[in-house]
Length: 221
Image (cartoon, rainbow, N blue to C red; front, side, top):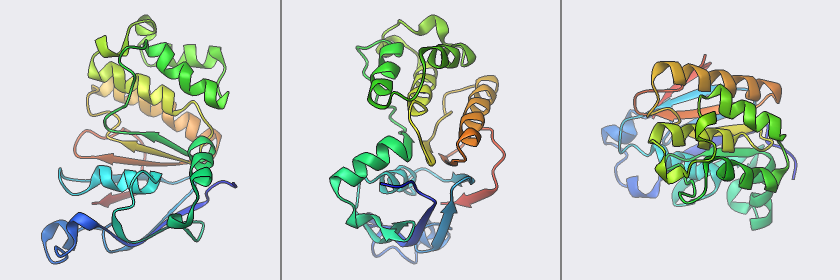
C-alpha cells in the first residue's frame, strides 16, 4: 500500500459525544464536527483538556477504534474501507504511534522493547538505536527491565521504539508529559531530525506539557 500524503477529518465526532453537539466540549472544538486536513510534513499540536477525546482522536487515526460519526480519509479514501492487511501495512510503513499508555513490555529490558519492534521493520541499525539511547540520556538503562524504570524513562524508550519504522506521519499522544524541559528539548530535536529526514508529518496531542517543537498549526480540541 502506498504512503499517506493527507489525512482529512470530515465532521468526525466520537460516538460517546452524540447528542452533545451544543455543549462546550464539542461546540468550541476546532476538530470535532469540523473539516480538517493535515498534510505530510506538517507539525501540528492538538491542545486539549482532559475528557475532550484526545486519545480517542489518536486511536481513530491509527485505526484502533471506529466508534465515531463522520469520516476519516487518507488521500481521499475512507479508512473504514481498509482491510486488516492494509492497516497492517500502514502501521508498518506509514503510521508510527506513541500511545499515552506507552504499551511497553514491563518484563523486557528497555533495549529489548526497542529491538523487538526493529526486528519487524529492519529499519534502524544497532548503532542508530544505541545512539538514540545515548542522546536521550538512558544509555545506562538499556538493560534494565522497563517495569523498573521511571515513567519519564519509559516515555523515552517508547519514543525510540516508535521511530524504529518508516513513517509518513508520527502520532504522539502526550509524548513528554513526564519529562523536564531539558529532556523535552532533546526528544524534540531527535523527533524533528527524523521526521524531517523522511518528510513526515508530526501530530502531537497534549493537555499541558507539550513537545517543544515549532508547530505550523495549533488546534484546540
